Length: 127
Image 1 (cartoon, rainbow, N blue to C red):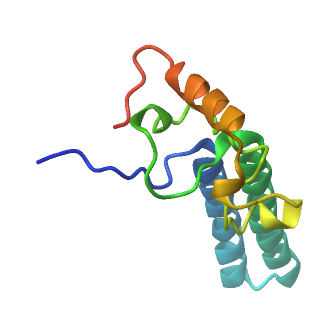
Image 2 (cartoon, rainbow, N blue to C red; image 1 turned 180 degrees about the vertical axis):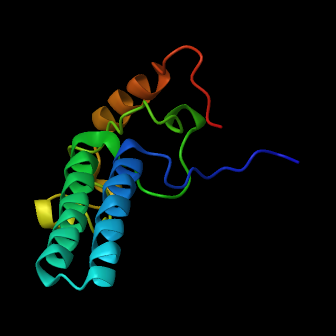
């Protein structure tokens, strides 16, 4: 079988958000059992922190859009070089004022992205 061409969710932003949200839902779930409205709100507050942390990491290049990417971009330790310009049709980039269409990226931005994706750490694998 050939390797898949997609890299879904293997990002620092995704896993960090997931970890924090898991703690928040666990806190809220335990507090539902103990019937403590204040602490349920605390657990939901932790989930909100998870969303904000994942969003901030996405905007700094540690989160990538799902779909096809060059294999050099699959590693978790590889930042997304086009994050500053924003991703086309990205729900996370729009509130930050980013997210122009992909065809609007300049040739220079694409060249920089290609150079940065080629400088993957030695020994980095996708799986």
